[in-house]
Image (tube, rainbow, N blue to C red):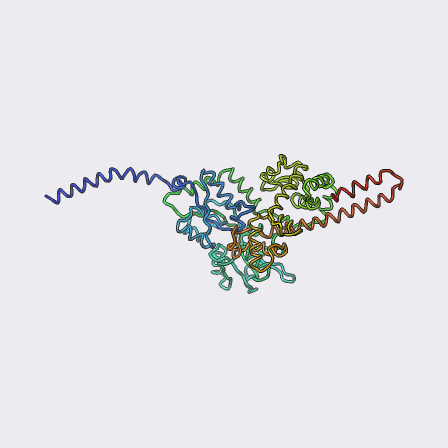
Length: 492
């Protein structure tokens, strides 16, 4: 009797418990993965500090993966949080441990990875290319068999799709040999090939095309595979709400347009800083410069900045084209950002007068950020480098310079260390992380060349004027007036 009563009581208690718990359980089950993320107010993106994914540029976050993920979180109406594993392989550990919702790091959706993770619809496609340095008298490898026969040093990133591809190729070509590294990034491997410290590396064609101009002499030998999809990686979940949402976002016409813009911004950048064509400059001196020349003189009068320096900066920025517009939205002869234009009261960035004079005033504020103890002309070169790459990165390069026992206040020393900010073993030890450190070096170098070329062209022009005056009647009253206009104004 006692047992029966106890069983009834237990059954009654269980019924009461279920009565109260079932609604709660139903409510819990109704919350999807996407719903939980939106309720939390943020989405976590696992990515890498690299030129193709995420980095700080002029004090602001940038990178293809960052910009695309930022657009997605804005689409959801929540914030973006970044998770930055210390190694490429750490991306997969982070996702396995569910420490991030999405991994975005130019990841190839390989068959092996699909066994463990889900992938979004692709947002880019790329091939995998063998990279070599052109050497006189040594032809490039033509195919895999040719590569194997040379028996030279090939290095790739461990745990990468490139490593996976080589392992698959080795099943058909067991004599294929290579090394794997967990210490070097893709950019560092390109640097090693460029310096001839290794013979070959493998990288995504789309990434190589974005970096090639910084490594003259590096080329693609051949592709090792067909075009492969790049996509976001997700940990499988009981519901596919997040994956479905990501795919809906990527399918939007607005998103597709954004992806095309980001491709131009990050992967189709020819290195104009490395471009120095005397013939084009001389042509622009004859056609474009005379229309805006006087505005540089006016800007010097207002700011005391040498007009030739201003003209050289303007040529570097826009080739003296008042209608120039970059993929990032900077405009005009001096290519001012919206923020810079507001700072110097420029209302129309495409107006040559406003752009040049406003750009000169902005350069004054830029130069004030450099310590006064640094003398000219290094003070100016530091200011230009800081403007180009961001002052945080410039300070990081000065820290690296000091560590190397060189002078952090000397441009010739610091410019040797700015490119090291592309290498993880260096940028991971300083405050602001990865930077395209080659760019400010080329930027400053080209401006200095343009100053020299401008000076030479002016000398040629003045020599021609003197020849013209020599042929004039010595008693002509317009002589002195003409000489003043041509010779005095440039020296203001």
